Length: 165
Image 1 (cartoon, rainbow, N blue to C red):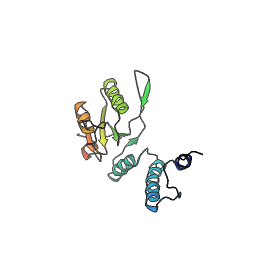
Image 2 (image 1 turned 180 degrees about the horizontal axis):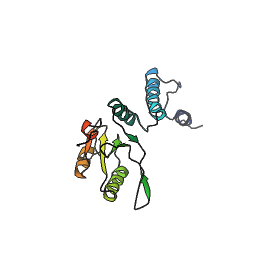
Image 3 (image 1 turned 60 degrees about the vertical axis):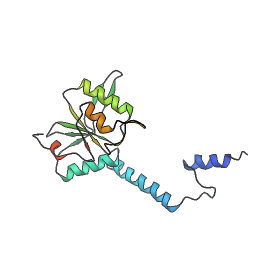
Image 4 (image 1 turned 60 degrees about the horizontal axis):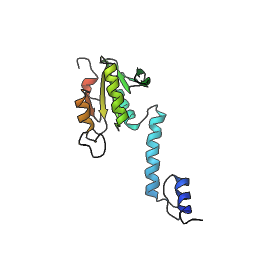
């Protein structure tokens, strides 16, 4: 038996490194449990993230009618499908909720914007000042502005919900 075998078993069996005693502090256990509970409550409610769930709750509390992931848009070069998170029928606005905006998401949104120029697609970022990648000077907000996407941070602005934009 190699000296690292027992460590390997601890990593494999728990998905994370655990002390040799096999104990996890109550604080660490509660953090994991709470994070998974939040995620599962969003999933149970039919949303992909807690951020989307909170946006939907806010719209509902304001009495704003919306649709969640009902529209499917096919885009190329390889035929793929994009499903915007929210559609607000009164203003004909699509809202994409983003906690993380990776390279594939950025490319997809540029292709969608190019292939569906008449659609009004906007972003709501969890944190607009996040960098598009480690070491970059460009933030999510900078990227959206550069590519002419309207954006907001944290919540959907009231003016996006009412006619007369």
